[in-house]
Amino acid sequence: MTRASPPLQQARSALNATTASSQQHNRKQDGFQDFSAAGAGAKSKPRANDRSKSTTIDREEPLQTAAAFHSAYKGMRGKALRRYRHTWYRWEGPNYRAVSAEEARVDMTEFLASGTDIKGDRFRPKPGDVSAALTMLMSHRPAIIDATVPMPGWLPGAPEPYREHDPRDLISCKNGLVDLRTGKRLLHTPYLLTATSTGYDHSPMAGHPRFEKFLDEIFPGSAAKRSEGFDDGTNEQKEPQLQRELLQEIFGYLISRETRQQKTSPYPGRSSLRPWKTSISASNAAAPGVKTEIGLLSSLVSASAARHGPVQRY
Image 1 (cartoon, one colour):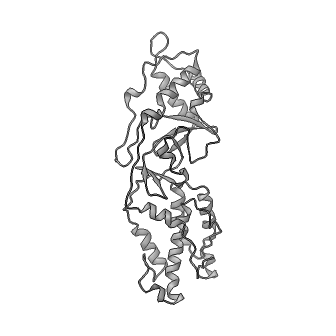
Image 2: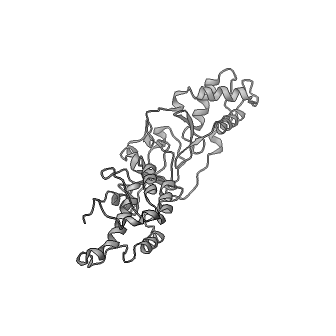
Image 3: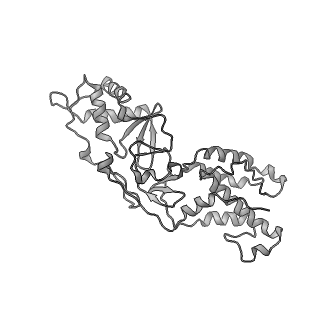
C-alpha cells in the first residue's frame, strides 16, 4: 500500500505554524484608509469626520454626486461600495459582501442627506436623486471592478508586499489574511477581492481536540501520531492509522488549491463525515472548486456504501 503525496499537509502545517507575521503597507500611497485591526483584536469603526457633511449636492449633476460619494467612502470599512459583475459589493474588512439594491439605496440616501444644496441649506434627497446618483455611480470608472478580475484576486494598485502572495492561497479570518503555504498573516485590505471569510480568528497554536477525538472514535487503534513501531506492524494493524491519515489528507486537500491529485474521492461507509465536510464548505476557502469537490465527496459518503469494504489508496 503506497502513500500518495500529501499536498494538503502544506495547508495543515501552514495553518498550525508557530509564527504568524503581519505585514503593513503605506495607506497614504495606495489611497485607501486604514480601518483594519488584524492581530490587534480591536474593532474599527468609520470616523465621523470622514464623511464630508459640507459636500455640495447639485441635483442637476448626478455624476458629480456619484464621484463625491465614491471619494468619501473609498477604502472605508463597512462603507466602500463597488460594482462588480452587475452586483453591488461593500467592503466589510475581512471580505467584500454582496449587497442588495435596497442597501445601496440606503447608503446613497444617507450620503445625500448629509450634504448641502447649492444654496448652502441641508439637502433633502428625493427618490429620483437617489436613483440618478446610483445610476451614475455604475458609470463612474473608479467605482467599477473590472469583470476580468477573478475572485479571489488582487485589484489594480495592490501594494507589492501583498502581490507576493497568491490570492488563491489566502484565507480571510477575523484577525487577518492567512497564507496557507507560508503561514504568514497579513492585514485585511480592500485590494483583495474576496467574498468569503471564516468568521473566526486565526490562531497558529490552536489545537483541535474535538476532531482528534472524532478520529479516535471512527478509527479505533489509530492515533494522532504514528507509534514508534508502526513500520514493523502488519498491514491489518497499520490499516486504521492509514485510514485516519488519508482522511486528514482529503480534508486538507479540499482547502488547498492543489489539483495534482484531483480525482474522485470515494470514502465508503462514513455518513458521520457529513457534518465535518459541511463545516468546511461553510468556511472560507480561496481555492477554486472547493465546494464542488466537497459536494462530490458528500454524495459518495453514505452508510449504504459500507458494503464496499475498507478504504484503499488509489
